[in-house]
Amino acid sequence: MELFDKESLYEIKKATTTQYYVPAELFDGMQYKLVRLEVKWAYVACLNVMIKHAQYDKKNLAFIKDDSPAIIESLKVLANKTVDREKIAGYLSEMEDEKLIVRDGKNIYLRKIVSIF
Image (tube, rainbow, N blue to C red):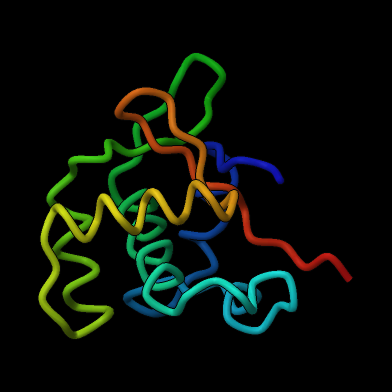
């Protein structure tokens, strides 16, 4: 799976007409059926934080910090429930297990959600 870069985030920003970008394939794709719903929403929260506040490495890959308070705030709105750092840490761990993210220290790189069909 490919990671988001500056150009791919720009394309999402340009195409998004709603407050939050939600990749439909994450919820509809067969390869994501076993991923827990809460983890999917955590991915969406991270992606939307990345769209708005991405940092870029030397390879122009986009990342966010794992302790960004914006992740918590975004997930509170998306999931309509109480979220804290401990829950976010658990979701990030599950996302890593599901190969939805790549971690490099405190940096989180999100993999693009694509259809395999």
